[in-house]
Image 1 (tube, rainbow, N blue to C red):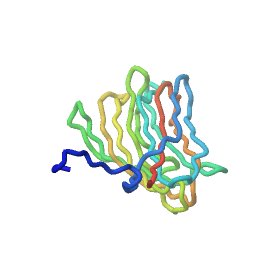
Image 2: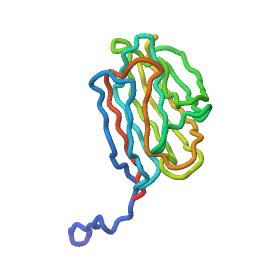
Image 3: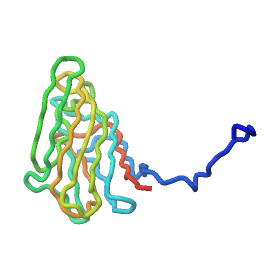
Image 4: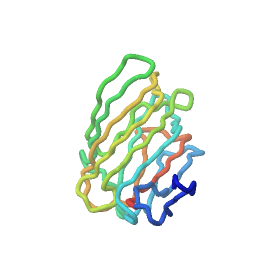
Length: 192
């Protein structure tokens, strides 16, 4: 208090709760693999998740698409046009910019990642409704990458996954080739 020079404080137990992220899993790619898969992502603590990836590199010099699919304990959701995605992009070393969209059997995050010497990417995305019973899952994402064909890109976008019910697994796949490096981390949004 100002009149006595004493420091007043409030103990943490008396403060209100707030949102936070709970770490769930990490995979670091150290040898070539065509997919990175996470299973056992149940509904404990909330149905929304965040995925962060860093320095993801592939072995295909022509450039490949990075995609993901979600599933439950029995299978992955790969039905026709189940995944709808759109993003805007800006090329940092050029005036190039634009919009891209797709509706397909997997959620395409980025195209033409590049090979070890040509490119890599990092960023994050959120899936809202991943582990609850909602009919539609909503996705938002932001990433930066070096493209195989040249150029440094920043992309922001989102989309929808038409898949009812709680999901428990997530798989990252490429249109061709293998991941040769990179780190994938999954977090769950907690309400308190």
